Image (tube, rainbow, N blue to C red):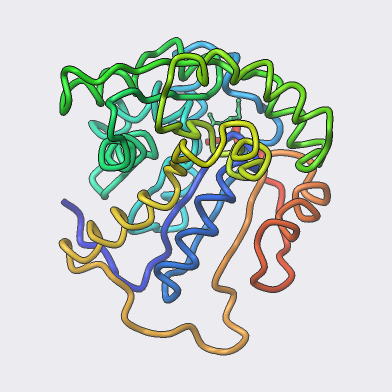
Length: 275
Ligand code: DGL
């Protein structure tokens, strides 16, 4: 393991904007930490791409983040966690975590009837990763996966509270309601942004699990274990959070500012194919 500076930033990446829901949770739970965020806005979505492609993209982003001497990396994308994390873990010598395992853990502690639904991109559902991790801990639990490919474009269009989103959500979720699930994992980092609509449709009996929350808890524990928690509060004017994208920095900036309420954020464009 390389010698790592506990005051170094944490690298967080996603295919685009979804990972901001994870970054936001890290900001809330470990407010001393600095973050370098990368959103692959030029090549999003990942959810309809192959494992090989998502792994190649993820490797490039990890290389980019390492040029910023990050002390740890959070794969803030379910699709990249499902497809690339295992490979990345073998290739780097700093701590790296994804969102799938923490999401699984939270769902396992929430369910009472052992019937868990997962909504995510086609890639994440196709990988069966949530089923695999849940079954490793609770063999008898039943996992129902449902790909919801229209949610990401609806969310990116800003239709978080809109009858169109409610209608699409009803179509996707009715079969999960009929299967009597009591826990629903929001297995795509965009979905917490339509949590209210999802809650309305699933009803109060179903616990919605946002893996971002548990990911921040696990990240904090992992950094603590490795002596890497930043114990210094940020100084005034310090550029604590830095955002990079592969395209459309201005659009990203507007979106990021609507999700993260920690002051005006700016974003820079990077040619990620160079890494
Ligand atoms: N952020 C991605 C995820 O969590 C969804 C968006 C995409 O398909 O790239 O899976």
